[in-house]
Length: 358
Image (cartoon, rainbow, N blue to C red):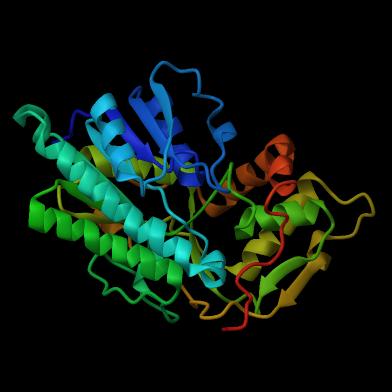
């Protein structure tokens, strides 16, 4: 039975996936949203320009580690549900500086759970029975696959990086708060997202932008590592389905059914740019590819089995990798006013996560 949520608090709503969720809730589902975001380097309110003046949208600049602040926001806004997306999320950054990942992803999730538990415990029975805390996580908690197989909801956790270890820890905390305190929760683990408004440290936007700037296109190792790619708007739709229709206490895997090697992703981007925005010197973009030393502990392959969400919630991705990537490339070509200011700030496209172990 679908839950009747009218107001949803979204943490990390100025981030890549979070902003897509906020836009979907406000625009497609006509729900009220309270966006809680610290506005770290990857948070960008311009990603929410389409909803920022909507009466159903409110913004609170706040760190999820600030428990008193979170409790105050919950008491003032009285949400029916929480979608917890605030997280440090880049593997390479976690290699260079794992401390932020421990603090935000583990301590921050603990603070959100305790704040939610205190808030939920004081709700009247009618609202208490309808409350839900949705924790959004990653398939990287499951470790690495070989040539075959895929991650299911029952796959054992085997994180390999500081990032995935911090997300695995947060997943366990959420389940513990459900089992110990009865807090109503749902969880989801997704494959690699891509699409508009993606911070340009991640593979797809990084390659698009570097290609347009005629810079070298870095490919780790031989480019053989495989990921399952999920268009971000499809993911936002799935997350809302899980929140509104998922079974309490359950976990759902969300994938795009698009397993592609990193090298093939880069070649796809080059081919699209050759077609849509060819170089003035008529050289092919693929000639900019530069094979660089691999990332430490680079997982070989991820693949998501989305059978559960497909069968239980009737969800399927609407975009293939080809249609989604074309939309993404066209968006970056048309929206340099969004990504150019980012490159003039803290991040300028330099490589992260290549440190020798200290």
